[in-house]
Image (cartoon, rainbow, N blue to C red):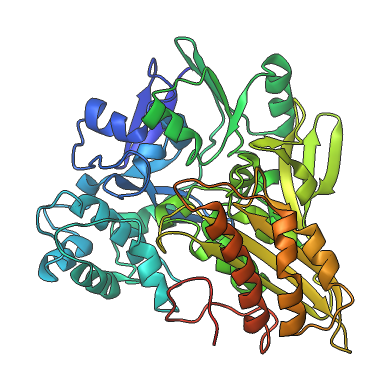
Length: 483
């Protein structure tokens, strides 16, 4: 269909002729004239453009999610409900989040306030505020230069989990998901959202040059920062097969289109190492859209998921019309920004095996700031120690140390067969200089990266002395913690 169909503040909207790379932010401000939604950074850092989108939660239900509208392309809301700050006031009555922000003095100049209010709206309708850190995680994607964050955080504490009987609660209870299937064109651009694998294969047969997209948190930056107009995009978001997130053979199957917020919730019990990495992957608004497959398939040398998945022994499961192909995840990355994917093939799942008895696992992310930053160095480690205290297996994976995420093979060899002691760890640290030749850039010098890589291995030993897979403490300043 050459028509976009979605709901905007509960009103059905149909549009045609608009570029498929029009962002929801641009549409709201320039075509819908809903100017409460603001533009700050146009890259998903400031949160001024936050809207709420009602969509499937991956568990058979629906969720109200705060999302950066500057990174959301209009075809991505096909069949969905989008709410802006203008929807908060109902029948002349201000919403709870607006009242609380005002009484807590959480707004001064007001520019960031609409985005803050929409992030608080998601908090209102979340049911999982069981740990205090989640308040910070909910609001870390909203910058505010005027108030400081205390009044905003106090407002968040007051509204979190209230679940008021508002229009959004009614929408959550009554809305039935609509199909996202789409074949849209405008000018020279085309955007497909197939709902079945068979339809996807047909699209790829006809358009082998197509680019995949799901969350758009990376690709949309080409639109907002480089003014690119990709001619042909294929969204994988409507394919139910790729949303798998479940136990499998003692391990776990993680679908390529699983949102990072979903994986974060799942990994709290399933994999502390994964949860630890995802905590500082990005803001709530980013994690509500960013996907496992998107992070891996960009093949960035500083992608945060690759090191921890590699350390856990994960396999990449690739699909095409010809069938399934599997490989160790470390072999999926072949060079800088290049993967082993062939034309007509996609990453469908990441299969994480059952972890061996005696395994100690952890993940680290080191960046210039704690929230919303790109890694200078990241790492995922797994060491298996037998009953005699000797290392029988070592998997040490790093990001930011070369052109692609990779294992420190020589360092691993130096550990295997040795007692798991501080002296053994110190003895192999020099081998990291043989495994990697890091580069100097604005995120860190080569010396700095090399030193951090060694210190992370030291920290891994110390942190796993008392726990095999430690979670982050409640009050923490980084993913590195030595008790």
